[in-house]
Structure formats: C-alpha cells, structure tokens
Length: 144
Ligand code: ZN
Image 1 (cartoon, rainbow, N blue to C red):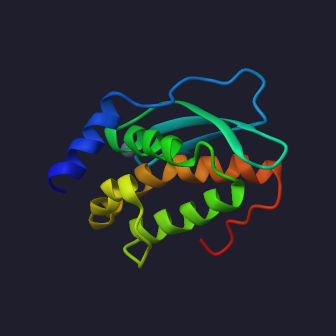
Image 2: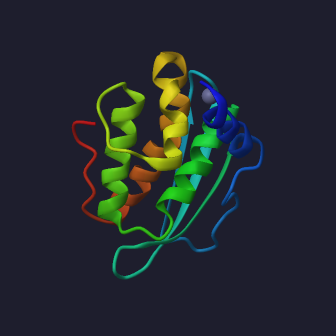
C-alpha cells in the first residue's frame, strides 16, 4: 500500500467517521471476525423509499476493520439500497482481487487483496451492513 491510500486508511482508522449509535434504528446488526477479533455493530436509518438516510457504527478492532467501516459509512449514507448492494459487490470484487469499477476513496482498500488474512477485516463491516439491509427487504448477497 502506498502514499495516499495508506494515509486514508490511517486517517479513517484513527479518526473514524460516522461512529456512534442510532436510537431506534430501522435495522441494526452485529458482526464478528474471529480471525482477528474485530467486532462491529451497524445501525441504519432507512427512509420509506429505501434510502439509507443515516448510518452509524460502533466497533473495536484493527485499524483496517475500523477504516473500512468508516469509509463504508461515508460511501453508503444517502444511497438507495440497490446502489449499496452494487457498491458491496464492487468492493467484494476489489478485495478478492477480481475486476471492479472505480470506487473512488474506497480504492484505498484495494491493496488489502494482497493480504488474504486481512481481507476479512475489510469485508466485516460490509457483510454486517448487508445483513442489516437484508432484514429490511429484498437485498441479495447470494454468490458473493
Ligand atoms: Zn482485523
């Protein structure tokens, strides 16, 4: 990992954005990565049109898991569930070293695909987010 990307991970890992909880969330979910000990809880406020109006997370874990959650929260807030799912699939493709569309800031995590032990740190928040969204409606994570 180099330069800007590494800076972004350190920045978000030490000063995570959208950290906190939502009282009476539309959905929430916990996730755990036993390989590293990362734990996360994601809170969502979804409006009637299926847009993620607010997202917050609480968690403890390595810098990559927290940076990934922070970047994720920033990226998905304000987006409809379908777009969140498309983003998730893209991020998953990037982290597993497959092809993906340009992901802007989330590209900061692309170098992690070279460290298989850390991939689960980076995907934890996304899997937790998708599990929370799944409770809300027709979001599919099959085949990913
Ligand atoms: Zn970790």
